[in-house]
Image 1: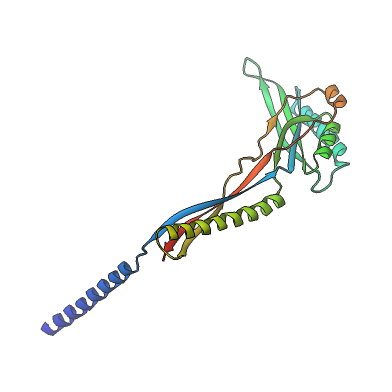
Image 2: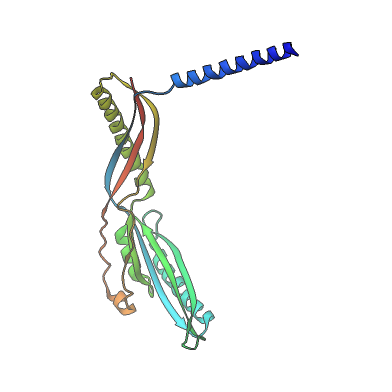
Amino acid sequence: MKNLNSFGNFFLSIAMISAAASVGAQTAAEPHNVVQLSATGSVEAQQDWLTLTLSTTKEGSEPAAVQSQLRQALEGAMAAVKKTAEPGSMEVHSGAFNLQPRYAKDGKISGWVGSTELVLEGSDFVRIGTAANRAQPLAISAMAFSLNRQTTARLESQAQALAIGSFKAKAAEIARGFGFADYALREVTVSQADQPGAPVPRFMPMASKMAMADAAPMPMESAKSWVVVTVSGAVQLK
């Protein structure tokens, strides 16, 4: 029994020495002279994508009749604008559809009201504005500008290159400032910030059929957007 206890104490001592060595190794490997920093790259561009929403409202005593009127209005408008549709330049698709009851003072249903939308979007603002003018009886209810996917991807690459270059220059400057010759990259995160110029709908009152028929295409001029990429991380001075 005494020998067993001796062996047990021996192995316990070995385990404690190994654990202490492991802790010592971890302590020795702890990073020193690590600096956290971040840098951004931004590129400005003219918004090149227009999303135009057209809508109309119908009401009546029967939901089926209101729905039929909305369908006919949407089909007629879609047929009129699809004549000049072209992928990328002007794309056409239906939007939201809504049908709900109206209630009288006594709480009973007194009628039905519904609305339907048609969406025109693309890069050819003149084509879209002209088509919207023919989409009777629908009228413009919202307009939003943005950057298309291809432009966004291209600008992200440019902004990312600027951000990485700025991060590297800042890291080298900090290293020299603290008297070090160089630095080593430990970790890095690359992220795109929200675009300040993201699409914001511009709501307008519904125009009458006659006013829309006689009106010239609405002038449309986009604003500018910023694509911003941020690079953040840690470097070890050496």
